[in-house]
Structure formats: structure tokens, C-alpha cells
Length: 431
Image 1 (cartoon, helix red, strand yellow):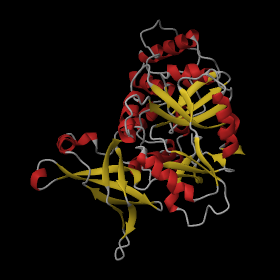
Image 2 (cartoon, rainbow, N blue to C red):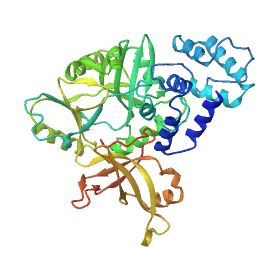
Image 3 (tube, rainbow, N blue to C red):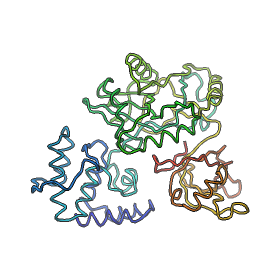
Image 4 (cartoon, rainbow, N blue to C red):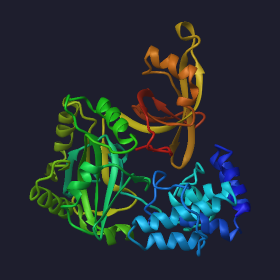
């Protein structure tokens, strides 16, 4: 494993995605590296371990298996104290031989080698090496051509601004996943409710903090992220469920039933149960009257909500970004990468004047500067602590994407800082 450890350390040593891809390509014939990455990041291999359950100060017993045999045992078993003991004893045996190798194995067990790159990046080097955990993602309504809804029944619902959460209930075992496929632990209140739901199903929705103080959407989002990122037990969060489908169909990447059928069944299920921490996202409108779209969008704005969602009634659930699910907002938001922090002028000398952000248009990357929306305190904070923003994904509001008639370069009209750092995202998202 010495060569694997060196490659892992090399990957950790750069923040550049292109450099990481080059490192992986340089080692593209390394079968053991492929095996390590596959076992670590395959979202459907579950080992039931976390950093808190892994110990190395336990009695040493010479193991009768290697790391891959151990991972296979864990992936095909219900985790219990005996298996935890065997795992910790295995790590202890490695500790006496090579501390770096032990740390590598711990990363494999908790499914995070801290490489700073995602599954998509790895699969660019080895196509389909790792199955990707994907959820259905929305496009922007305003990007669609006029008349695309003609004669089609659609569903309108409230656009939720929280932490995307997918609940998988498999043979009675409950697991919570972020949109990137990372396990989330500590949702004990919601888990108690999930025990009453149908088995071998996937429940998709948004995790949002209880809005006791009737906060507007942006403030509630900050509270939600604080609670969701808390270590250990997480309380005061509500799972707003907007879809469900059989686990088998989710793993294949597409449902059999249409959206309205799925939503109707979901509502009937949740209405039949006395749940406290799981709520149904109700339909605002079902029909083909396009005039209802602006009516409900204005309603959302007047109620301090970000916007509404539109879904085609007969569309299946697909584990990818789809044009059958659309976000509708008057002022668009995008999650962009911060590349630079620029010092201000005048009263903002020695403070942040603007940030350079990277955005995407038709698969190509462009940059623009955003200097609006920052408070004086934020300008001082981020200029003196640049690491809080650099290379982070942040939410920027803008009116539209524009193109320079001479240079053909793209830019954002009226880019505005929204005060949100997306710790739950690692990639640019224009929708």
C-alpha cells in the first residue's frame, strides 16, 4: 500500500482539479488504486463506520483477512459490536506496522480519503469505475423556450431553500444522504418518524429548521445549515418530503410512475400517519393554465419565499438534471466558485471591494467580479480572513447571463452577494 499512500498524499497536496486529474491519469494503470477508490466511494457499499466508532486502543489480535475482505464483510452484514471490535482490532494491528497505512484504511472505512475531488472527477479517468449517487435536479424555467408547456399538465409547489436530503429505507435500515451521496448522521427525531414509513423506498426532500420565529427564506437557510452541520445529534429540523419512489427504481436511475402519481401516493401515506418531523410538500396548483405560474410566483415573493417549483405531471423521476422539474425565481441565484478577493478603493481600502467568481455557460467556465451586497463587517471579515471565501462555493444572485457582442465573452448582470457560503456543495451550479 506504500505506493497508494504516496498517490493519496500527492492528491491531497493540490487544490487544482486539473492537477488531481493529471495525477490520476499518471496512475491510470494502477489496479490497486482503482480498487481502493472503488471500495471507498461506491455509494452502495455501506460499512456502518464513522470516526467516532473507530478506535485503535483495543486488544491486538492478528487479523485473518485484509482490508478488502473486511470491507466485504461489513458491506454484507448488519453492523454490531462484534464487527466493530474486529474492525478496531484490525486497525490496531496495522497501527503497530504503519501509521499511514492505518489512516488510509480508516479513510476507506468511513468512505472519505479527503482527496478533495468527487466521484465525477475520478470517473473522468476511469469511466464508470464508481457508480454515482445522483438525485433529480431542476433546471431554470426561464431557460425554456416559449410554448413548451402548451397542452401539458403541470404541478406547482413552494420552492424550498434548505439542505437537500434523501432518505433510504432498505430492509428496515434507515440512512440519510446529502445530494452528493454523503451519509448524514444524528437525525434522531426524523429517524423515529421514518420507522413508520414504507420499507425499501427512497424519500426525497429538503431538510429545513423549524421556523418558530417566522424567518424569511435566506435567514432560515443559515439557521438550517448551522443545525445540519452540527456534529452529533441534530434536533429542530423538519424533513419536507416532495417525492418518493421504490429503492430499486432509484438505483436504476429512473422511476416507472409519473410525478403526480408519486406525489398523490406520498400525500396519502403521510396524511395517514401521525408524524412530527416529516411533512408533505403540498401542491399549490395542478393543471395546464400557465397564468397560474406568475400568480403563485408573486404569492411566494409576498410571503418571503424564494420562488416556486414546476413539475410536469406525467414525468418520471430521473437521477440527473431534468427539464421536467423547473425552478421559477424572478432574480436568479447560482452557486459559484470564489477565485479571488479584490481590495476595495475609497472607504473600502484595506477591505474587500469585490470577489472574482467563476460561473459556467454551455459547459465552459467564465469569470466576473461581484462587489454588491456585502456589509461593512463582511468586507473587513473576508479581506482579513480570505480563507473563509477562497475556493469556496457561494450563492450569487443575478438578473441574467449576458454576452459581449464584440468579445463573445459571457458575464452576469447585476451580480449580488447573498451572504451564503455553500458548505454542502463543492461544484458550480447555475440552477
